[in-house]
Image (cartoon, rainbow, N blue to C red; front, side, top):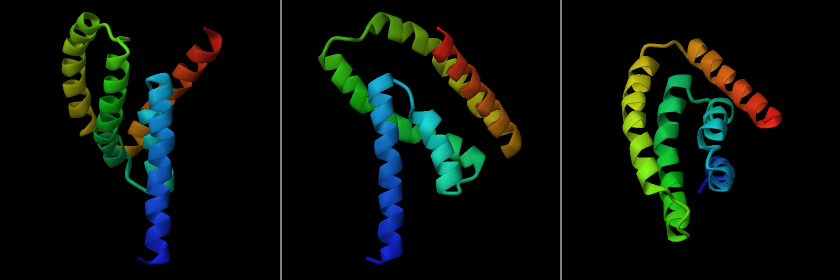
Length: 123
């Protein structure tokens, strides 16, 4: 395998390990780490990085679901109720994403990250 290919695969794996660790530890971090990682380090276009992050986060979610479920940390009823709204919101969000420019996506995502950071520090 070429040295360049080995470096690239190592970079992909490192990004995945960091995002997976944060997702497992905080129940979040997949999108907040993977999206900027793909955009800045892997030079993936904004729309594609957000859409691809959803698929990547599915893997994180399955591992976390297994772990937390086996420890009986889950509220299944609450998850089902909130997921019903989440499916609708996910559909709407995917439709909106397909219509936004890369710059608009970046600004909206950045604003959400700032609000989340302030909320975490202040509360």
